[in-house]
Amino acid sequence: MNYLTVENISKSYGELTLFEGLSFSIHKDQKIAFVAKNGTGKTSILNMLSSRDQPDSGQITYRKGIKVAFLDQNPDLDPKLSIEDTIFASENHILDVINAYHHALKDPDDHDNYEAAFDNMERHNAWDFETQYKQILFKLKLDDLDQMVNTLSGGQKKRLALANALINKPDLLVLDEPTNHLDLEMIEWLESFFAKEKITLFMVTHDRYFLERVCDEIIELDEGKIYTYKGNYSYYLEKKDERIKREAVELGKSKQLFKKELDWMRRQPKARTTKSKSRIDDFHDIKQRAHQRRLEHEIQLEINMTRLGSKIIELHNVSKSFGENRMLEKFDYVFKKGERIGIIGKNGSGKTTFLNLLTGSLKPDSGKIIIGETVKFGYYTQDGIAIKPGQKVIDVIREFGDYIPLKKGRQISAQQLLERFLFDRKKQYDYVEKLSGGEQKRLYLCTVLIQNPNVLILDEPTNDLDIVTLNVLENFLLDFPGCIIVVSHDRYFMDKIVDHLFVFKGQGEIDDFPGNYSDYRDYQDSRPVIKDTSEKKEKKTWKKDANIKLSYAEQKELNTLESKIKALEHDKKEIEAKFGDDAMTAEEINELSLQLKDLMESIQTKEIRWLELLEKLEE
Image (cartoon, rainbow, N blue to C red; front, side, top):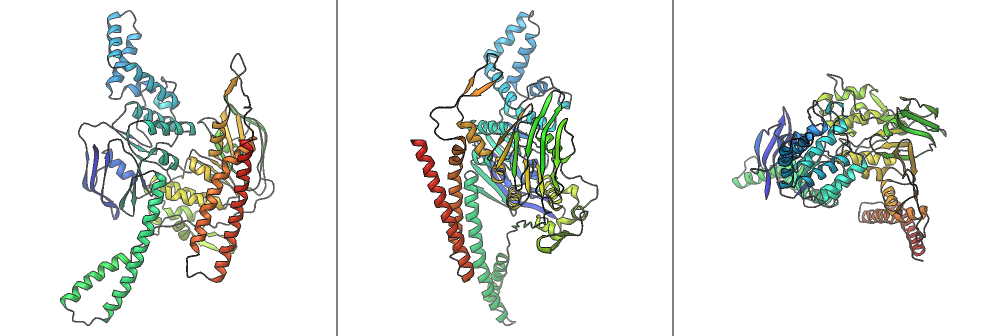
């Protein structure tokens, strides 16, 4: 059943054409992700679907009678209502029944009104519905139903809008970055909810695990064209890679044909026959195809990092509270060179407070924080870039200088640096306030990195960044030689970047976990059942399972070995494929051979260790 049809839509802003002639459709029970680079039209398309904007041409048609809900990044809620009033204000007749029942409970002496309200609850099976919506509010940490909307944080408003959309069970739900402002526990719950619910989804999200586990189709807007992939994120990556390789082959053939036809054109006399004119027309078509370029850019960052001394950051018995809320309680830690620490925990558990303590914008209530003399922080906050009216993109970078120092004594101009951050020369003279949200975040990230920090602190760096920019950022961070401290709800990003976690559990309790996010989840899932040893249920202890024959460190090692072996096998295949290049020199072949030898030895060592642990487990 077709819910929505988009036919030949186009959109331009002045001389900038975002897209033209786009068509796609959404059918019942599909879970579709819409993927595109920042600034290419994602938000414009979502605005058109919600009727807040209109295409310049083409049309968008909804199936008659279907109920559609939209979740914006910044939802517009009535500040005069409470959380409960916001829920009941939606157009849902079952909620009206529940609301009437609640009012009847307030006047128990009016027996007729109470019986009528009770019968209505029975007739519409509203008891189950009420249980479901309260579970949703509970999962999204919206427990205080009397709290007024005007007192909610931006994240709470986003969660309230999400709850409203889920509770009303629309036929089609359109979501713009649904995982932003949700902690990891909420994201995993929402992921599970969408995966099992029969609901039609159309979403924009950068959360690649969410894409992998929820979506069954990817629609990509690339270079102004729509490409559809009938599968999840892994399938999309595989098929996109095949498409790009196929396009490269076709481009190569077009170039060869163009060269051949160019020779023919140069040999032609001035007087041409009708047959020649036809071939000339074909030549111009071939020329256009041969000169097509994929506008793919990779940021190549070689910023010259300030040397980092042996003393970096030391925390000794650090405590911090806000009233009754304890954020840290006698916390001790000494940072080491090259550490990559991820910070996870529920909203309000103290993650951002911890970052502000490190950078000195907050002072601890007690204890001591010692910062090494050579430490130079680069702090990427959730607040983003401070936009100055009339300021252009190039002006933002020039505030840090016309030239930026690189490694080995080289330098790069502000314009060249921006090009590496995917801002072409024309875009550099756009006003900052006209950039998309993702482009502003990319520019802000650039301003943090170009200051040559040796300790990077990133607070939710993946919000609003497109997947292309995320991949570029990840590649840069993998090569970054300094310390990295990152708060993020993006599980894919955390798995790729960090190798150590601080798990903020609330009320000052922080677990120091030696692994990435998936390691932590695996560890949590493998732990034995909690035994309650206190009559007051104030403390819970773990009873070790007698059947577990591996230590914790060995269990963690076994969990990670298989993925490491797969990654090495993938690298091995990539190197083997390079040997097929006839243009390689003897020196390059020799270097590749040495790399392949090292890889194969590493794979063999890890496979032997993997077998040893399996045998120990099965004894």
